[in-house]
Length: 258
Image (cartoon, rainbow, N blue to C red):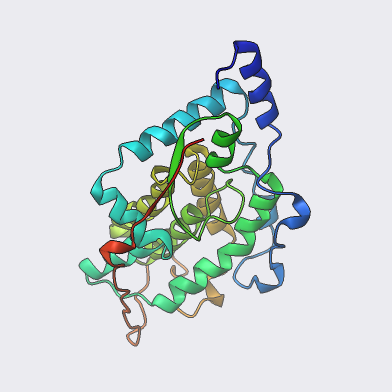
């Protein structure tokens, strides 16, 4: 279907008001599950996501380009992070022989979930494929069961960034490698066609700002920093637990010709 410039302007104006789904159909965040966050996390402000014909059109084109040009390595990275957002953080720590506890990583991720959902429900942003559908744009994305919430911010970005920030306080000399592991998971969701770049950026912002409210004393591991601000050692009883890679045939693509 072809559109005149006037029709396109109306369409882009309409998508500014699109939502992922009606508010009453969104799952309520389980605030009662929050245990490691100090009061005040509610004050974190992410700012509005991009709107308007130019901004939205630019992001949709970027997502399409990332998806169409995804390398085999990026596809594999997406697979590994789809249900394990901290996969490459753990892989890095294994490679560098750094101690960590998988249960602690999973706990931190779960503690992020209600806060992520709090922001997702507030903005209720439609996913890229929903907007592409509205604009009658050919669009493809990777198949997944982990994209059943509004788009903004990206939870697959926030969770590993919080984990990476936490372990960066334990191993400050490894900060670059840990943060890179978080980026692989987060931006991989953009490459997969599941998120806009601005979702990723908001996820990074939320993850970094959440660290200001983390109560380290409520985690199973010792507090990452001592009174002088120096990194402390990990408990000697801490065990490394590895997760196997997903099989190669687990990668599937969901194509939509809209």
